[in-house]
Length: 66
Image (cartoon, rainbow, N blue to C red; front, side, top):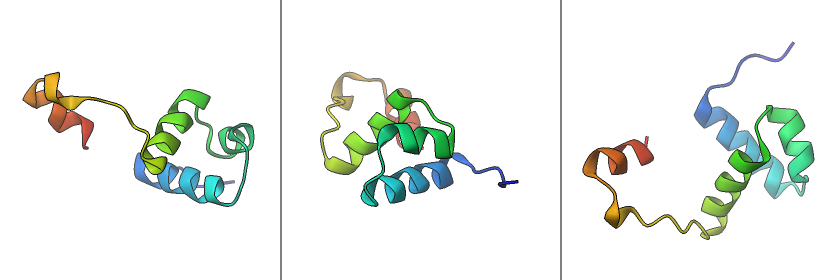
């Protein structure tokens, strides 16, 4: 049985599997995350994250980087 992973550990595993050439479907099965959540991690990794934080409140901006 696999130990439970926290958010950062799951994100690191997604990145590792993505860099190993795994498909999003394979990654989703391995880490039990939705395709959308995996896509967000991959976009951030590839530098295609288009979230504009300048129009967000300071509280929202702080939560984004947790």
